[in-house]
Image (cartoon, rainbow, N blue to C red; front, side, top):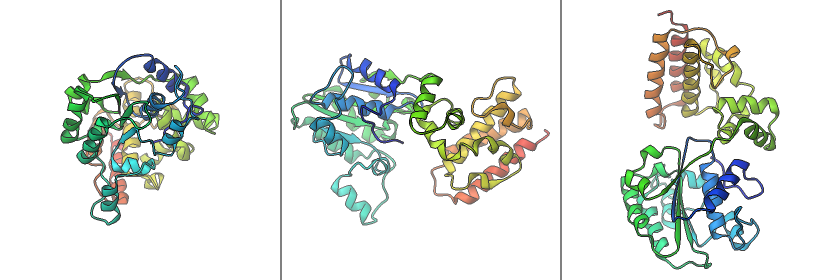
Length: 334
């Protein structure tokens, strides 16, 4: 995940959506779409503009006291609700109690948005604005709310107190309560065209050749593509390495990244077998192996593996098992 972007570095398709949404009225937005399209960046751009002292129809100025306060994560009128793991990754401060519990090893950072944090947000929404520009609550990723957290938010969404706006950003809107979705104005994230995505990646210091591999590996989603910068030279070799059982191709990868890459390989092999074009790999890099039965069985096994990928398994052993499973599927004759 990336940190909130300032006005000067925001991607052009995010800037265009920011302008569109700022022109519309509403107190709660739900930004939805698959990962890598910039939900967090768009949500950040909206709250910056809502709270900015010199906002324009295009968005926040980026230089006023309010924008600076957001940049340093100290804005009194902004409440950010994220899992503690995400808060720490993006350098947002945790509440004093939560930080003490984690520092004292009483518990690990939560991967869900905790109900205690949501209750604090409900109280925040009822307070008077400190800077006089209203208040904003940003929830990301919104699908990480459990049933108790979502219910705590629901009443405030129905009857917001004072001048407060909400923006919920999600990569899995179907996991949200229908009542949460119905109380927000929905916005489907825009997919950038390839030239725009390529230009943006090159603006991040990526070469043209790297950008093409990275964008393909990410399925056309530019922010996800940045995660492939370190392995752009490795990606074309991955299918043959897996076919030969080479586990070292996944050195330093997490289990989630490993399963994701294998899922993409399985998808492209099935697409190739059906006569369609592969999406994540170049056709020339794919072995013409595996059968319908072996590949579909492998695909189902990978879907099951994804459900438990965040469990504390031994990464090396899990990768060996996944590559062995893949090698069998790719070399099967039945």
